[in-house]
Image (cartoon, rainbow, N blue to C red; front, side, top):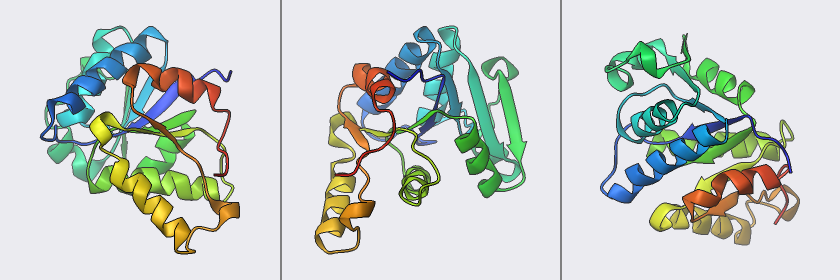
Length: 191
């Protein structure tokens, strides 16, 4: 089993319409703190982003927020220095994503919108291109990512994701199993 010291969690700056999403973020934050795993995330203080950061911190864990300057007013307007062990401000989104990658041993997508989707797909692309073999997972809370998984399958069936490039990210329905699953997954496998 691989020791995971930090997980980059991609998630929404909104809470969404299903209270289970916020509940899952809160539970995951507590589990990460209890396991001594640092949260690396986009630095937001609202929505699911704020929930997981507050949960990690309130349970004694470490929080690293990384945010581009232009997003601070929108996503970190309620910034409290006590929430962060590190709060890193970048000039660009590209710098933010590179730092999040560099500081993380694994990647997880909780429910979110276009930004969350873009970030996790980029990490999958980097893995497909051989830039890393770090574990990647979708927290499939109440089937949130079922359409995404179906789309990936459809793309493969239509010949746009070839079998030698087909990554197999973890799809985990139970929030309590995420840390163990990421720790057991010593890199990505091909479907």
